[in-house]
Length: 89
Image (tube, rainbow, N blue to C red; front, side, top):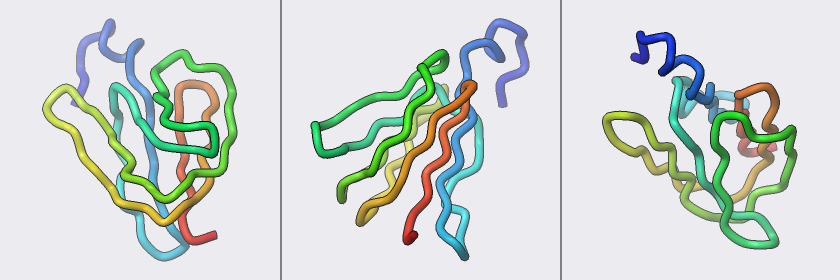
């Protein structure tokens, strides 16, 4: 999806999954969600981060479009330009 070297430096590997379903597993420009303190965005280069997610719509932005995934809550772990969202745990 992102072929140029400068693009590879600015991507975030995003995976959104429950124990039985993978909802998203592609590179992205950002991911947005909501935790107890409010809405937040994760971009490439974000510091290590872990949070419980509130019921919300996760918004995953790519160069082409954005994908929205309605969730009832979950856990997000961000590390080394990757964001993993665990649902139904």
